[in-house]
Length: 617
Image 1 (cartoon, helix red, strand yellow):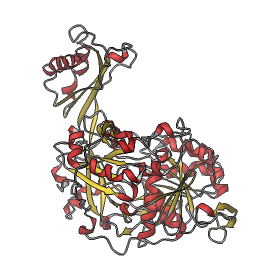
Image 2 (spheres, helix red, strand yellow):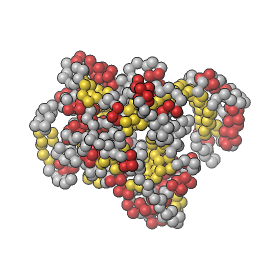
Image 3 (cartoon, rainbow, N blue to C red):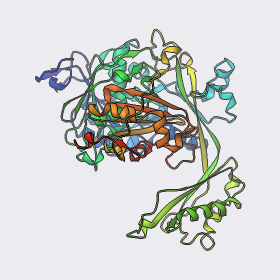
Image 4 (tube, one colour):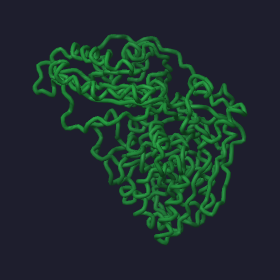
């Protein structure tokens, strides 16, 4: 799209009766019809002042908040099994309530998945507050994601809910699910907004749907507008995790201004699906090609990004620094979506308990070995026992803490009674364990075991889902569907040939000397995207990070299937490590359960870096 530097005042009254006031926009870095979607949450527990900050920030059209992740759903599923009431993110109500009048006055739309397992209840809670305050705001919720009460019938009808990675049918899992929620697309949100909803509350929609829905409504896209939808999915993916797009959780954090409190991102999405990623001008953080790339490669399956509304081809994404804190994303190639929706199923598979103890150098390895031996016999009934030292002691330490290594002890069993002796066994080692054995004296005493929740990512034909928008007066509007879906062959990730290994000449230094990385989880798999800012270093990066080289750098991946892709437009190599996280983040025994630090671990590994690149730094 063309850019100019004209500043104009455009009235949108002709298009939307709910927003009669003119909006001042800068056409120099956006389309005059772009919708400005501001994220205010990237996960359950994100900064609770976010809505306060955004409402005091730059003008926006839509507030979008994401609270749900696979591990969040697992936690909520555990709460549901224990009979906890609510089922939605209650603190969202406190976040939004002080701003309801301003939302109404400014004509801002609010879309969030804070509904969790009970979007209808959250919608009712909001309606009660709105009525109490005498405001004219319409609330709708999206239904159809929960299929727990349909599992028996669906399987009887021939729907196997096959595992996304293994292809095994759900009946082979051998446990009773406590929740089952399909990842819905954006067009239930579109239907709600088209009928006049001001606040749309969802349960398990895809994270991107929270921004794709408002963009599709704003621009009048149909479910068959795959090009614009792919662009919107890409922009939505960038902003869905809040400050991760503005310098948070970024390998280059030391260069980010205002990193102590980075602001939240905004996506300006144009009618063709192209977008500009920016942030509120008064807030900390930064938006650069690198911070956007970091989020772009986060938690993806490969170059084909499968979404309920479109398949976005991320290898067609190009990023441009348009100005300070403004990164343009050009049109993205889109093709029809898959016919199957992913269904997140959770079930309790047992109980778990953990304790942190400490040891002090010297002889750390021998002390850890003794700890394992002393735990083995009294905890013989425990099915899984993991003892993991974290870090190493410094040589000739300057303080006691430089000589101290934490050790995480975790135990898991199907039967709760197997773990009954755990805390007593660990505490009983003070006078008979390794020299210097101690716990954190200021930490709370260890409580009882807690449920261990496992994850099953199943697949289900989207045509059997009742994807609907539901209003307070009982009106139900079905979400429209695309005219066709992708063939299975079209959804297979491409196979990129392995490059010839790089010349090993150069100085051996951490990979992170030149490269950035971002990692996360996709079920039981961990993904890592690695990239360089300088195009001249791209050939070095791609030939350095072959699959075999990564297996050597990361011994934990040696026996795993590795899927490798290249994204040359953004100078990135992307890996999926199959099964590194067990069956999912909620049930594996790793300290880094969802793989957040795998990318930084890879950056810490030493590789050969040509002197010519070091001379430029």
